[in-house]
Image (cartoon, rainbow, N blue to C red; front, side, top):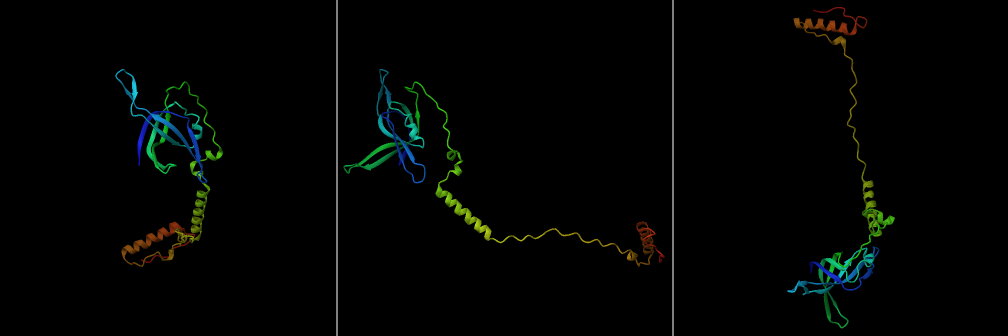
Length: 218
């Protein structure tokens, strides 16, 4: 069980840095601070009196914890934000022991008793660290992704190629009209007029050198 904790206090001793192996991954780094969280209460004479203050270990897990070891110093005023946990273990005498500790999200340095601050340029990361996060994967993850990619490629290769059916149809061949059969056999007055009109149209299209009309049956 844990609870949210924000509090101000003073570092009471030199920071302690530790590093833990984490398999093939980058080692986990821990910076441990011993902080006294005071509770100043103003008195009648205007002076502040500490009531209810307590000591608590502060754990800060971060990849740059080794560098931060030189930044935090004894007597420095800090603002700690994190979670308060109860840590339990068995002592050398076999008796159960417990202590409340704070797993910090951030430890801010307050300007009390600080004379100057020196800023340095941002360190240049090497080529491996400069890669995007998706490319910085462990060898085990890379091997697993390679196996998945090969399996997907094998499934695609086993599928039959889709049949391509052409949808375009070639145009129909051109069939010239049969000018010999364009006349109607209708013997009515309207039919006779149509035969004359068809004969004139034939002459205008084909011309006398192509064909000729010998006679018209009325």
